[in-house]
Image 1 (cartoon, each protein chain N blue to C red):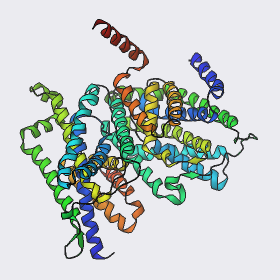
Image 2: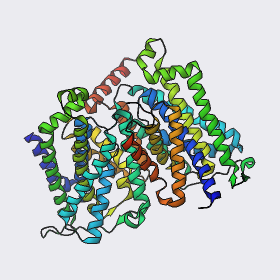
Image 3: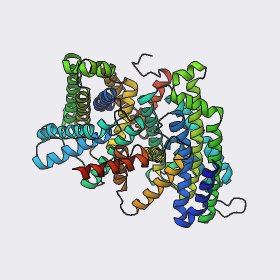
Amino acid sequence: MTRAWLAILAAVVLLPLVVRHAIATEIWIFAIFGLGLNLLLGYTGLLSFGQATFFGSAAYVGGYLLKHHGTHVLLALLIGVAVGAVSAAVVGYLCVQRSGLYFIMLTFALNQMFYFTAYQWTSVTGGEDGMPGIPRPPFLGLDLEGTLTYYGFVAAFFLLALALMQRVVESPLGTILRAIRENEVRAEAVGYDARRFKLLAFVLGGGFAGLAGVLYAMLFGIVPLEAIGFVFSGNVVFATLIGGSGSLWGPVIGAFVFIWLSESVSVIWQRWPLLLGVAFVIVVLFFRGGVVEAWDRLLAWRRRLGAA
Amino acid sequence: VSPSLLFSQVLNGVVTGMLYALMGIGLSIITGILNIPNFAHGALFALGAYMIFTVISIVGDFWVALVLAPVGVLVLGLVIEFAGIRPLYRAGHDYQLLLTFGLSLIITEGIIVVWGPIGMSQLPPPVLRGGVDLGLTIYPKYRLFVMVMAGLLVLGAWLFFEKTRYGAIMRAGIEDKEMVSLLGIDVHRLFTAAFGLGAYLAGIAGALTAPIRGLNPFMGVDMLGIAFVVVALGGLGNLPGAIVAGIILGLAQSLVALVWPEASVAVIFAVMAAVLLVRPQGLFGIR
């Protein structure tokens, strides 16, 4: 564990030296987002395809407060966490009534409801144009408008979120959630109200998404409509799966790979979601077992070629 | 609101609702039999619309195109099932979801690459242009045609499911795949056929929609969420449920459009949320 933490700290220090500050910042924001999803996906076994609902809602509310009311940064972030948690409580309440495929479809459908609301409510959200002009007010005398300062600010929140999530998954609550993932009926039989714990996982995950949402709005100075759209929901699922949903560190690795790749590709070709789709299909069909299995397959394939 | 406007909005609601029902039935068949989340269902719908557009521009005949376009989507559906979904039967919903979501991105972006990002319009065939006087209002002929056509397709699907041997096998497949397999039926062929049938229904729904709503690359995504709602309310594999849910949603949308047009899409999801609050198992589900 401490080794992994040292690696993370080293990455936090070295990353802004290697990639552009904005990309480095986005990686940790996306990692916070992924940590929240992974509590559902990895630990509770709930495939939520609607995480952008909480991310986007918080980004809009936090962004609005910063822009129009000059709210203090910490307060805006705190409210963002609350918005993420509350919206997740509402969505989660409806979704945990059903399981399996129904559950997945409901998370997506409710995501669409929030999306269309944001799309039509142009006086607040700006609709398709997004909500621009979100400031980064100074924090404790630090000028957050500086890209490196803001990177440090976000990285600190990421480390805080990671430590918090570690506490959660290593606590008795984490054990209960894993028990629900492994066998819901058994967890119920032992006396745990599975639905209530699933809802709790939703609320916690929503809080993480909310924090990430407000940090994202401040990073780019705008809340684009996509922030609440289903593609964001899909991206965070994809990132978490390529990183490995089984562990605490998976979404962090996934965020790193995903943001770095998508930022590199999107400057080359405007239609990069096409390549993203191709990447999804290839990973799912050929690299499901992760990098290790992919390597074994490659060796087997070369051996077969040699034999023929 | 004048009675004639109200009447035509009710008709619009039924037309839209029938198209939603077609989408829901196709998705319900795929989801129910293959037990996968099909996030490509909306993209197949969009593809149906773009295919009819292109076939019309090549052949010049709407009716030929209406036959060919959905068949093209059907063929693509068969390929997707065989090459993409079959290796993932045992892989878990997360990977199945990523595959279909990836395919949906590929199809949507592919549409933009081939046909361009800007929306297009498609005229109905000459015979179906103009309106019919229904007394209270003059109503577009093409929409009446869509109502009848979608009704026939839904009826056809229902007859297929309830009255034919193959339909009975599909129903049995939704109930218990292992038992069907033990009875000596090739479930893999059943799965491919089910995906093809679902894709066909999505394709023809898209083809029928093109002259009403026009085409744009993201039309499928909007439809996908609605198809999910139809299935969530109507129940997996429940055809009458899908029809009732589809028409309720279509009517809700077109009637809300009269008083509060901005909310007309969001109301679909609000109806779903309201129903699920009262009946978490959907309209017809049994606990």
